[in-house]
Image 1 (tube, rainbow, N blue to C red):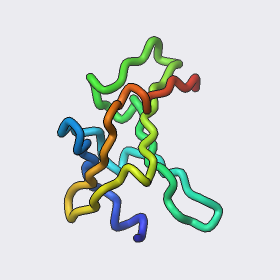
Image 2: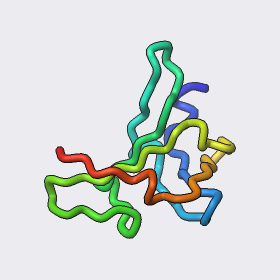
Image 3: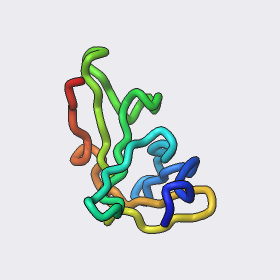
Image 4: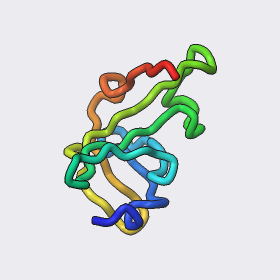
Length: 93
């Protein structure tokens, strides 16, 4: 799958139907051979309610392992994250 095929797709959590973000607003973690390992969403993407920053220097990130991706459709990517809070991490910028 090419990166250009993912651009602009909305990421939806199968577990609760929540909109998590757009691939265009995300970073991708790639392996040394170019395979996608994870999709990384940050609070600066503007998804209020899912993220909470303590200060403007703190950023919350949501790491979605590629194994959690269940389906890539023409407009959306369906992921299965049972507990979003387990995937959230604070990252000091």
